Amino acid sequence: MSDERAETAEWDPGFTRQITNWVGPLIRRYFRAEVRGIASVPAEGGALVVSNHSGGMLTPDVMVLAPAFYEYFGFDRPLYTLAHYGVLMGPLGDLLRKAGVIEASRENAADALRSGAVVLVFPGGDYDSYRPTMTANKVDFAGRTGYVRTALETGVPIVPVVSIGAQETQMFLARGDSIARRIGLTRARMEILPVSVGFPFGLSVIFPPNIPLPSKIVTRVLDPIDITERFGDDPDVDEVDHHVRSVMQTALDELARKRRFPVLG
Image (cartoon, rainbow, N blue to C red; front, side, top):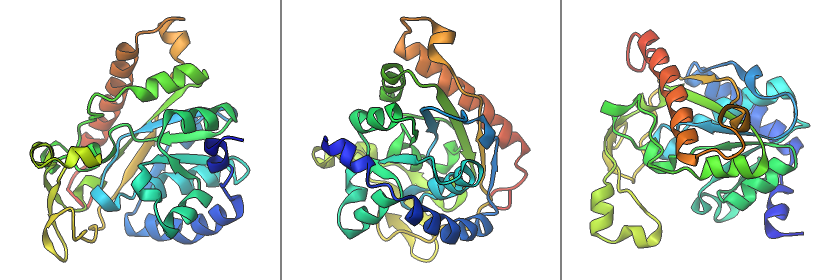
């Protein structure tokens, strides 16, 4: 058994149920969270759920979507979430793995998808979650298209998801990607040096992380995209990526038009 298989095998449905039942209601109340269209996730078989990422270091995206997933599908079907290896370091990493968080790699994702699981990926990663507040409603994957290749290799549909509200939990001023390059942080796989303003610490350059404001979060799950059915047997990866982002941007724009006030929703 490979290391990647061992990592996915660490998912513990009982532990996941406990965390979901405890943390899920708190997150839902604090952010007045709504998840729409969860039934769009295919009822069986592997599926790659592709979402925008919001809220900086303390992003609530997973804890908004996962409880809705398990409430609908039950705890016999795992939802794996791909995460940067740094998130999984130390004792906390063991707990996260039990809850279905696995290190972000195409190999781990493919292994989980071929097992029939649902995999949640945020292609934009930190680059997306720290996007400036002025461009909060823009889908930006920083040119990353690996998710398309993973879906093609495993033959699973892509399920687009968009979320609005978490980028209003504090004021994101800049990603600081140019600064990160100048001082050599990219050698340590740190592509950004984000600057934000929030409560209670005020100005923050990554640290200290401010407490998220209780902004209303709305997440919408869109219809699955069957790549082969839409683009043929030899699809162009960039064309597929452009289509996925276009579908997501249209849905996010629609959510933005219906949002009356920042934070309040």
